[in-house]
Length: 211
Image 1 (tube, rainbow, N blue to C red):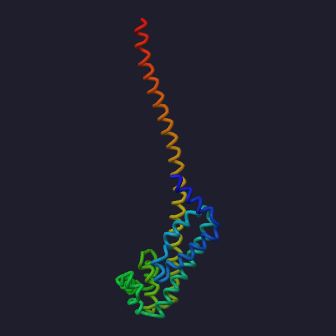
Image 2: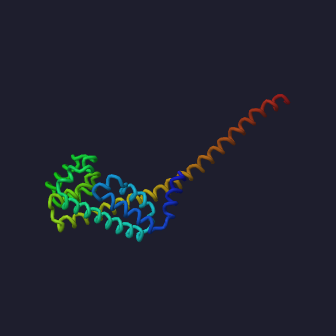
């Protein structure tokens, strides 16, 4: 277990601005059409969140990730407004699966701007919904509030999960190490009892022969 906490402590030892910069960049890329399928933004966020050990760090990372997620959504929205439904036949969308584009469009038709918020928590689809929203001519003044709300909730949730996981790993290791000392102690006691019993068994016949 120590290798896990050693890795987390190594990550925590990195300069916080560097951790924030990398996390923000990957989040922005993950939320942008096309790049989102290559950049491990969500995984990077969970890993970086293990460095969050205080409320100020939580707030700073939450703000950075939220802003970057909104920016990524807005870029996707702009691409959708610029190229429209032609994006469905693009190489990127075909590679991911046009059914996901259709699912994003169907979600927008049924839910409107609310779909932008809901899609934030749906893998793959969340990368396509902003562009699909732009292609469907959803007004930006309706798109942006949903994007802000979704990004804020999504980032807070994942940072909370990552921070809890980091703290839990250290707790589990401390419990594991404590348990190992207990097991070692029990093993020593059992070993001592076995050795004493064997010595007694070998000593008894000697006394019998003398008598």
